[in-house]
Length: 426
Ligand code: IMP
Image (cartoon, rainbow, N blue to C red; front, side, top):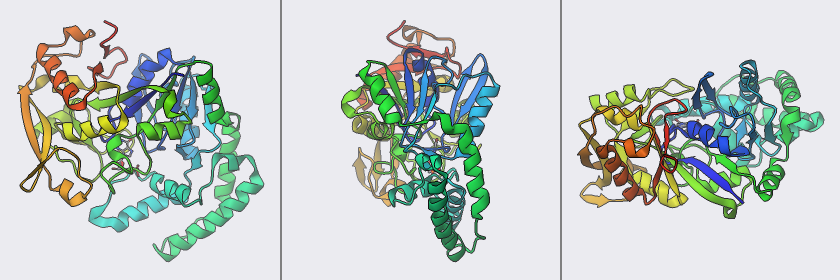
C-alpha cells in the first residue's frame, strides 16, 4: 500500500511544493496533512508561477485527486479565493476534496494571533498572523468548529454563537478589543460553504480506499520539522506536526502504509520569524545567499534569515522522521562560493554538543562548529543528470548524506519544473 510522505527537514520553505508537483505526475492522489494558510508553496510551470496556500501541490496535474486532510486548519475565504484563482487560470479543480473533520480558522483566530504576538513584544514568535496557533489551540481544547459543522446551518449557528461570545469576552476583557459581530460572520460562512459543499467528504475513507486499490498517494506536509510543536525550537514553532508521524495523522494514512519518506532540505539553511538559528549568517555571505535564493516569504514578503547548512538540526529531523531519501533543493544558490560551510556541531559554553537542545537559552547561545569544504564555482542550473554535477558539488552532497544517514535522490538546480535532477533517472 504505497504512500510517500514529502516533508520539510528544516524550518520550512525547502521547496516541498515543487517536488510534490513533480512527483504527482506518477501519483493518483496528493493529500495535504497539516498547517493552514500560513504555508506558501510556489510552483513554476510553463503556465506561469502558482502560489498555493491550502490547495495541495498536486493540483496542476489534471489526473491527480487533491485532498485537504483532517489535520489542516482551513480559512474558508482563503481557500475559496485560491480555488477561484486556479479556475480562472484554467486549472481543473474538480478533483478537490476537503476533509469534513478539518478545523476552521475563523476571524477571531486571526485577531487573537495578532494580539498575542503584540503582547509578546520582543519575544514575538514572528507568526504568519494567519490565526493558525489560536485555531489549533481551540482544536486541542475542544472548542473548534469543523468543516462538517458547515453542513448543518442550525448546528453551525449554535456552535458559532457560543464561540463568538467566548472570544468576545477574551478580546474585550484581556485585550480591550472591540467585539466581533456574529451575524455577518455566520452569513459569510454560509456563503463560502455553498462554493465548497460538493468537495466536502470523509476523506479518510477515500484515502484508504485508494491505498487499498494500490494507488500511489503522496502526503504533503507544510512547514518544516524544525517547526514541529514537539521536536522543533519551542516556543518558536508552528502549532502542528510537520513530521512523518504528523503526516500520517493529518492525512489518515497508517505508518505501515508508508514506503518512502522524502525529506526536503535546502542546500543551506533559512528560517523566517523569531527563534534560535545557530548557523545563521548575519554578514554579506548571508545576504548573498538571500538574494541568490530569492529568500523572501511567499505570503508575508518577509526576508528569510539565512545560514550555512545546519547538519545538527538536519540530522535530528532525518533520524526522527526516518527519512528514506533526501531532496536537496536550491543547490545552484551555492554556485558562486569558493568554499561552503557546514555546521557540524554546536558549542554551548565550553561544551561541544551534536544534538538540538530543548532548552531555548542553550540553543540561542549555541555557536556553530563550522567545517568548510571547497565550492565548485560554476553554474549548475543547466545540469539535468546527477553525474554531470561538478565533482565538488557531488562531494558536498556526499557530506550531507553522511550526516543525515540517507541518500540524496533529488537535486534542485533552479525554480523551473525541469530543473530537478532525479538521480535514479539519468
Ligand atoms: P504560524 O504557523 O503562523 O503560527 O507561525 C509560527 C512560526 O512558523 C513562525 O516562525 C513562522 O514564520 C513559521 N512558519 C509558519 N508557516 C511557515 C512556512 O510555510 N514556511 C516557513 N515558516 C513558516
